[in-house]
Image (cartoon, rainbow, N blue to C red; front, top):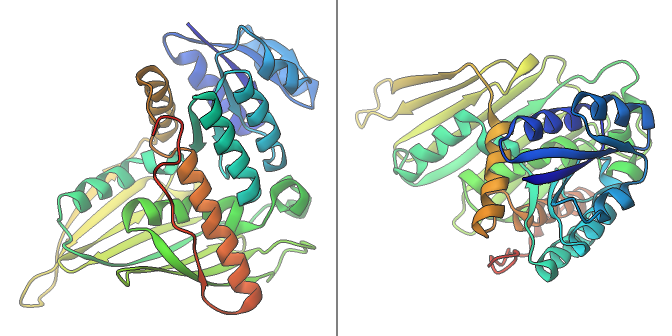
Length: 345
């Protein structure tokens, strides 16, 4: 039986708590939150203990793994303490506010020999997995470029949300939401080595973070990714398109207000007549469950999971390069990822 500590009892924490309790061989031991009432609410539901002391929760000898769902500012200190006490860690995205914090977390995982996973559940969405399958089968031929639009319109009082506070979050829409897209570019297209971006505050009165970011990414083989992430997309939108020599993939939807997941596979005709399209519909989103099972499997088989600490670190390097580019108004090079990074490499 693996006993888990949940740190952070917000909406995502509740999703994670449900997954822990539904999994055979797992139980929720303790819930920690700065708001004791929120911690108690989840703890009562799952017969766990409640506390406001995350340090004690992540140090307790009876705890085997820690799930971090706090504001980003607290990811690094919580994870480092958990790893120092021999716990495996699943940390919500972004892994940290900056590369330096993320590197400390990666180093702690390597010293401890424990799994540190970034919460990149989008990799496990059904249309993303189908896209990966088609790409690996060379159904698109050599890949050329990606186009993505992803965003929502916020909600009343959004300027008071923790994710729009630079101290708590580390950045704006690119870091909070766009980091999922940067990870998908790496996962499906290739490793970007250059970044050009432009950040903007069009509508929301945030003092220090952007509500829109436009990003160009380029790989060493001249593949291009064109991304727009937005908090002024007044209707929730998730659109991710991949084009190659022999066809294209159009991914739409995510869950909830974004609509169900759908993939269209277009096959280019060599006489340049209308492409032949095949549509795949995925009405249920089970990406959170698949990601949780991947985390547990990595623990039990002593390996690094898909969407591991190295992936979280590299996504943050892309974010930092994008912010530098927006400030300098020029292309910025990205430090390459060494796959030697990781607890079990």
